[in-house]
Image (tube, protein in one colour):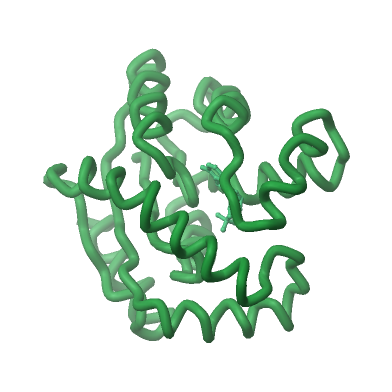
Length: 187
Ligand code: AMP
């Protein structure tokens, strides 16, 4: 099965994706991690996006689409993909459909972790201390939240018509969210 986890920054997408990966033997596709990796390795893409990402902006659809293409075409990962942080725009959502179609795959579950702005701010502040992520200062958090609302919300509307779309309260405890997701995936 292939799964998408949605939610504003700080909603716990990464944590939940990680849990599902371990329990259901899936492969996590985190575009945030892929992009941070490019920056760390100072590749051409990395140099190009470093500034934008540190200010809370998005990488271009072209760059992100390029980074995920190989993963979708990888036969070892076929029907074992969990997307965390992708797609974040309608263009990306359409590109994902296209790439999945080309490889005879589809999305089986879409989870939306819904969480209010106050909770997100508290969580990201905590993560900032624990993980020392450079993009995690308060202004960037707010910018990332606003960018999410503007750009990703239409993607949600796009997927919410899907019968496999589930909205989950991202303000719950981590283990409660995990068990709700696992329940759906186990049916
Ligand atoms: P994340 O780890 O998912 O919170 O992503 C961290 C940052 O990477 C985001 O704030 C964006 O700047 C960038 N990013 C991650 N995924 C995408 C994407 N699908 N499209 C564009 N930018 C992205």
